Length: 335
Image 1 (spheres, helix red, strand yellow):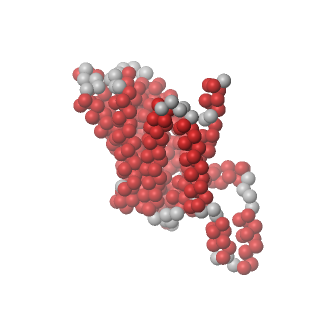
Image 2 (cartoon, rainbow, N blue to C red):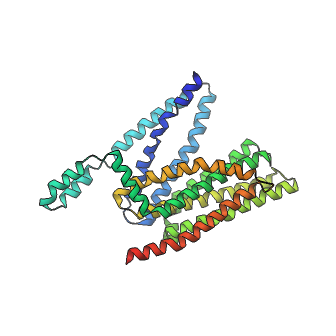
């Protein structure tokens, strides 16, 4: 019975989609400025990363003091605070309706008012998501394929480090923590200048190419360490931490560049639906990625090389495809 309740307690996680509301607000409130939008999205990731790092640590400390319900109680309080902050600061759409009505012609006011007040059905939302997906499907394809590669890498590397190189849990945890905090710090300050310097296409290409290279470097470090018998020596640990950190930063640059490009490719009122669609597709990618990663690990003696070469090849193909497709799409739109 206790185990059943443990599984049932996970049902409220469906409300984590509320994060999309904040992300959509960050995207829509920056207007057409791509650098500001990238900065806002990067800082959203920073806030989420800090919470995802501090939360488990705090929960472990509270549980370590003997009260296994303290973490859950604190989570409820935190959720209520989030709800209050949302009510206070997030736009509710009323101002949007007033603005639209104020700027419309008198003869169309009644019709527009009726349209605004009309409730959208579930099928209407599905149709709307389909229309959005058809407009930005190349970018969504990159999102899915990139998500599969990220899941394959994040599944395969810890398995190899713990099983083949005998990393201790605290060593693996140190590597993951440093990577997460690096992403948090980088996202808070670097996204706006990086977008101004490279543009969203440049960010995507840099993320894809650097990620493919860093994955192969990680495979080379593992192969050399296994061949020389150095295993989890301190020098190997530092190399693994450094490459893991840079790989995470590359993934973050890619993801932010993608979201900046996709949200800029649709109307402002469609950005929320687009972000929801992106997250749904990315979640599907995370389901299939681990299975593919472990399957490739078991193919022959290549080990991690098989995973990283597959991911690297796909990343490079995606970079080439984006470099061809996006400028052509921009040219057609300009004509």
